[in-house]
Length: 562
Image (cartoon, rainbow, N blue to C red; front, side):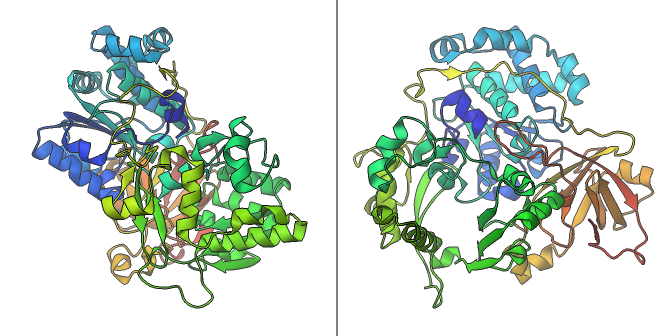
């Protein structure tokens, strides 16, 4: 969200999901939407098949939406800035941009135009592998559409220069005036049901609830009285999760409290993560199950499932919705917020800071939400009563009379003007070479979620996808002497894993795809700990590997070299 917030003022989805069926053009970049966001994919299909919307898909893999696309751009991994700048080059040179919108609402135009002059379609073809004619056709469709929406996910953000990728997409939307109206916008699709809500509540190292920067003058006024903390709030940002393990290895971080996360499988460079956990003096894990991470903990606290909780979720379109528990937790189990509050109270009593206890004296999830309304202006007009009556409200909703906000920036930008960034293409640090000639990119399947902690306990889902199947293009398989179903060893600079392969043209030549759902094939032992400087997100989509055929009788599937 760092790139979009820098450009527009907020890192959230600018528009609503229903607007997909009202738009004229949908550009989907770095998103296997059918697998990861199936309801949104269904809206895209209806927009194309019933409403006549044009669909442009940009992805190195032949994702399912390609079947319905009017244009498919297949860039090499890590070259997103180049193809976006190439579209802008053509749009500016052909006069297809929106001067009225840009001059009134944006800053940075001249620097951007100067930067993209170097990205002619022919030059972009050399950098990305996208044929120049295909790039031009996509630019024409997007720029000439009265209303156009951009959707993106982790295929854009999980790169060494992921923030630059997002800034570039924002440049494209702003240049064409495709922000601030229904059926337009730049829209990140969140990876889980409450990622947006967690960010809104300050579950980031550099902001507090409502995106108040840590250490800013607004902190004391907003939180001092409500939390009873005086001037004792931290004045400097903390570490993003991806950098905590480096700090643990160096001894700068002594303890961790991990909730609902399984970084042993989900974080990049899993061996690095394990070494960090082993260096900790104290590790607490709070989860539904004894995960691969929980097995390293000194203390495991029991979490509860969504079916046992009351509260709210805020989904990808900024919609706040009530969550009501269907069953009561078993004796001795309680909601995570209660566990956190009890820990805080015990720490405060131990330190003698009893004056701050009132900040933790909530009796229910309703109490917690009332505090949110006090401290997060965008939620001020949202109440449990309204959510019960209206079924969900989209922030910002600043007062009880406000209907919620379907799309952002109708009246301009919160900082006055949006910012265009003159972003240049930089080659990723890790690229294929003679020793590691292929790219590995990771993602999800339609049958499992993240590290499989929940979905692999479903017999039906595990029956549909019981084991990892690594995707390899038939041309690469021929060069390697592989046939469908062979056992292969995938080797990176950080380790190796073994799995069965499936030969498919879904992956481009030179590209290997695998999921991170299976503990037997911990694919993130291979990925790089290189992160984006601004967001701290690892470059999961850029990992150089080689693939070797192995003899099944000698190496059982799932063996991992550490």
